[in-house]
Amino acid sequence: LLSSMGADASKLLEEYLESAGAQVMFAGMGPSCDKEFDKEQEDLARKIFATLDSDDNHFIDGEEVHDLLVTMMEVYQQVAKGSKLTLQEAKHIFETSDCNHDGKLTKREFVVLLEQYAQHMTKEMFSLYNQDKKDQR
Image (cartoon, rainbow, N blue to C red; front, side):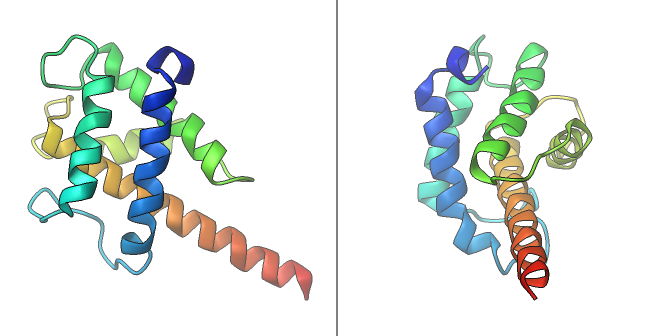
């Protein structure tokens, strides 16, 4: 799927995760639809959104939702070595980002999704790091 989206979309998503990592590392609460986001990250999110919005209707809906979930799982596995994002977890992130619960994402909701995605990955990576530390003892 990443190749069908193009290497640029995959790289943009990885770049977003790297830039968001430091900010979400200490976040206590998940992102909300009312939160102000970093302009640079929001601009990057809009570029990713444009890549995923294949029918250019300004929403991620229909088959694009499936493509998004699969892409999230694939990139997660590449970035968070030794870890996987399940389809159920990806759906949960999607559903909690869909602020008006209409089954599709606006650009603003997509930014919320990326923040939640980055936060989930950061927590998972810390968990793996802590497990490695325990195993080394």
